[in-house]
Image 1 (cartoon, rainbow, N blue to C red):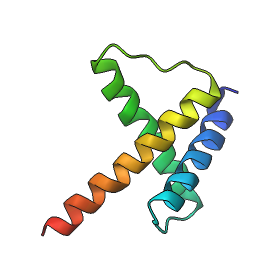
Image 2: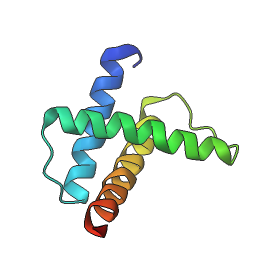
Image 3: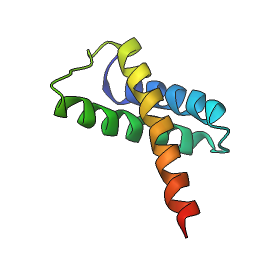
Image 4: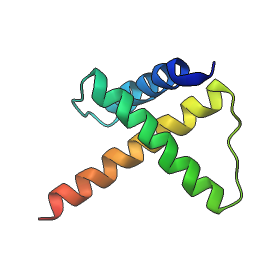
Length: 82
């Protein structure tokens, strides 16, 4: 599953699962954004260690999920700092 529609679906699913795991109340658009941003962030981090997540939807769903959880965690750390 590729292209924009695939990115939106996988990002939304990853963000939705991450919001459940992290007990974050995000809406549909927030879930999609979390999943997509999470995937971009974690793929960037993984590439720094010469690790490449396959383009398959399952691996990108996992990367998006873990990345979205990471984004939520970092956001909470920054928000609670002040």
